[in-house]
Image (cartoon, rainbow, N blue to C red; front, side, top):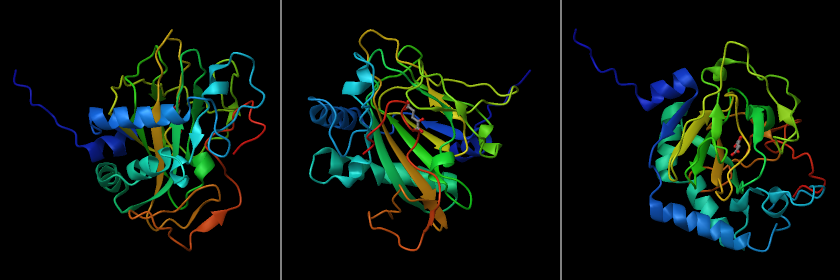
Length: 273
Ligand SMILES: O=C(O)CCC(=O)C(=O)O
């Protein structure tokens, strides 16, 4: 019997599954630079105005020292600022996003997750519940800064769930998720966890149900630089987000949605940025 190799294009994969994993898109030296620059800023703990400070965290919670940083690209006064902006507008990333969106894209936000050993993950959710991009939905580029797998809490995605509408979240389990929302996938859909290496980039549709499990490793961080986008020409987005073209200039005239907000609210965040 003769079997023909069937090749699936990145665009086809993104349209059918709701995500695409681009292996080795960011070179090892770039990954080290991103990691070292963010670790240097976080060396003494959270940075007011950038870190998502977990004011009510239990003693010993690793996320109290290493909370995520929100929109570092808005902070030219610290080295992570220009670096985050550079990757938010990276040509390699934008080229793939344009192929997936079928149009140009505008940048909406950047985030850096440290996820040190022993920290909780982020329960399954859909990004456009927060970004409120209309019409259509947002897109994400999730850059792995460490090798990641089940032990250190890699990303989970629910293939095909990008065809679903935005689902009303339930309350997440605070023992496993640092954010409060949980979107239950339909019974006939199941999460998968792609094992990633540092420098791989996971692209996904804003309707895709995704999240991450706790980091149960003894010593492995699971860091990620995460960027969100909307198709150029989007009419509306939540007020929390930027609308930047590929030169980093603000696009005027996008309506501000009356709801939406940051990508997930931490249980213990009483003083968000
Ligand atoms: O990196 C994680 O653990 C979760 C990130 C995420 O869910 C997101 O970027 O929307």
